[in-house]
Length: 249
Image (cartoon, rainbow, N blue to C red; front, side):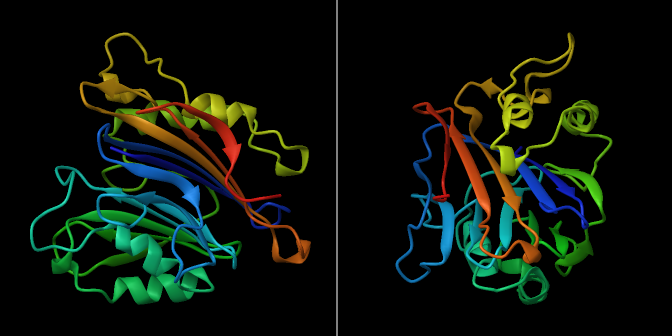
């Protein structure tokens, strides 16, 4: 169960902030975010070495895409396309509207179920493939939204219920001051209230399945000109890599 938090502030100089934790089998090989694809030089994303796609990335036009498995759909399935391809296909587009439109027209029977978030500094969408028909497209509103393996802001997902007030209370990242500390600390926090299951924590491990990495992305307003998106990344497993910038400042 991966987790994604998105804060939309349309009038802010950094109108989109995204925090994400990737939960995966520890032995599934991957590479940290970088420009891994020669035919997609504009894309900075983590690379899944098993299927060649990605779980989270951003392009030079300021489009972000992230894919999350839905309940009971972990791992690949014979005869179906990798959901990691969806991130790369979304990042082929120069704005979120075009990306969401193109991906919502895909054949849902070609994929296991998924949640997909596509955003730029103007628009953001949640694409929902729950296995019950066409891929649904839902605009994301302003403010804070949280997503895991169920529906948006799912009140049945304890991790989201517990995480929301913590993100509301924590100071959001300030890219201009290079201050990411509060949200970095939240993403790396393994604590949970007594009696809660292990995966109620934002970062957890149960056997060979765990939170393997965390990421923070900030998108600048168009009016800021030469400012680039910011992409911060930390790997927890199988080998730790401390927080660093995935895009040169």
